[in-house]
Length: 408
Image (tube, rainbow, N blue to C red; front, side, top):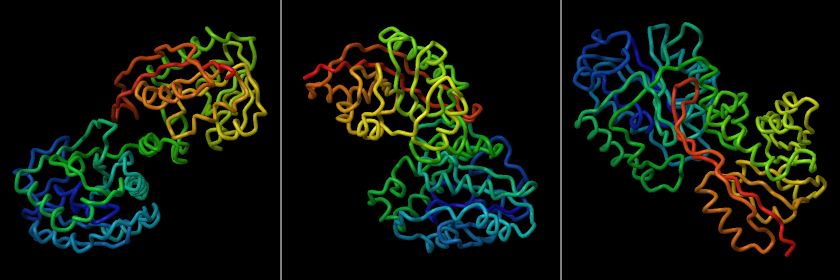
C-alpha cells in the first residue's frame, strides 16, 4: 500500500496531510484500511507508507521512500514551496489522472486530496478534479476537511497529531512559509485556523456528492450552477419555511391581481413557482444561463423569464411592476442606489439579519427616496444538514423589509 497526496501547492501537503507524511514505521506493517477512526500518533508509528506527493500547480511528483524520517520528508517538501501565485490552479482531471497513475504504478494505493468544499476555491477545485480523475477500481479517495469555516463535516478518519508532530508542522511553517504568514491573499494566507492539530478526512462519495459540495461554496461563481438546486431548496425544511413565509408576506401587502411582480435573481424558480401557484403574474429574471435554463423548464408557461441582472433592470426601466422582489440577493456589493431607478413604488427585500443591519438599514437612513413600510421575520436561524448529511451548517435566518417610494 502506498499513499498518494494530491495537493495544489507544496505547503498544503504539510498543513493538511502531515499525518500521512508521518507514517514512518516498518514498510509491511500498515493496514490496508484506516478504519472509521484513527487511534492517533502512537498507532501510526507502527506503520509505514511510501508516500507520493503530487503538486498540482507545477505537475511535479515527489517520492518519499518508506524509510525516510519525517524531518527529511518535510525538508524535501520544503524545496517545492513557492511564492504566492494567484494564478495557481488545478491542472484538470485528465492531467491529474496521469500523475496519479504514474504514482501508483499498478500498486495498491490510496489517494488523499483536498475537500471539494474547501473555502479556498483553488483547493476545492483540485480536490474535486483529483477524485474525478480516479478510474473505477482505482485508489480509494479521502478528502481532507481542510479550511471549512462555514461547514461542520462528519468525518470518517480523524488523526490527532502529538506534540512532536505539531511542533514539526509549526517549524515547517516558520522556516519555509513566512511569506504566507504575511500575505494578504485569502487563498494563501496561513492563519491559526488553517494549521490543524487534528487532521480530519472523509471518504469520497459518489461524484454527485462531490459536485454538490463544490457548488455549495460557490456563491455567485459560475460553479454554483454546475449542479441543479445547489442550495437544496427542494429538500430543505428551512428553505421551504422561508419560501412559504415569503410568499405569504408578499401576498399580505400585494395580493394576486394587483399587478405583475418582477423577481430579480430568480435562480431556478423555487420562489417563482410558489408565487405562480398563488395566482401571481411573475416576471422572473436570472442572468446565469444555466440557472435560467432550469428556471424556464420549471415554470413552463406559468411565468415569464428574462435574462436581466438588477443593473440591467434599473438601467432599462422597461419592466414595470406592482412590486420588485429582491429576495436573498443583495449580498454581493450591489449599489443600493439602483433601487431608485426600478420602475415600481414597492420593493420587497429579504436578507439575513446581520446584512440587513449593516447594509440596508444604514442606506435607508441616508436616502430620502424610500421608507420602510414593514419589517417581518420570515424564518429564524437554524442548523441543518446538507449534501446527504455529509455536513451541516448554520442558516442565518431571513427578515423581510418592504420599501415604499416616498416621491422625495
